[in-house]
View 1: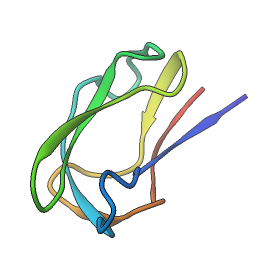
View 2 (view 1 turned 180 degrees about the horizontal axis):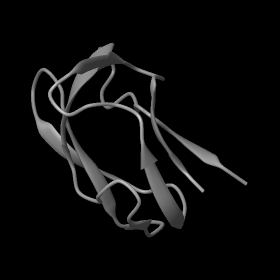
View 3 (view 1 turned 90 degrees about the vertical axis):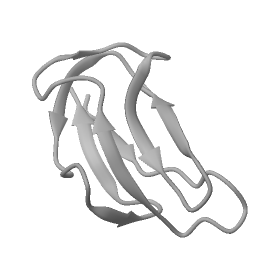
View 4 (view 1 turned 60 degrees about the vertical axis):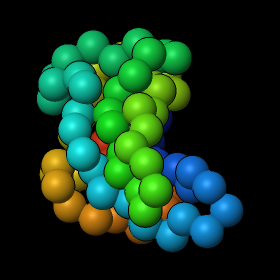
Length: 76
């Protein structure tokens, strides 16, 4: 079953964020609870943990701005 990786809302007023860095390569092994990517918001940079364990398929590109709820990748 594929799990979508969604851009989370980190903070009350956050509407969008910049995907700063993938910490797992495309096709790499994501591990639930381990850092998966770095997200820059207005006030800080945060590492976001993987929601599941499996193979990562990256959709979103580093350096781009995405709205909260955007699908950044899929874990299969």
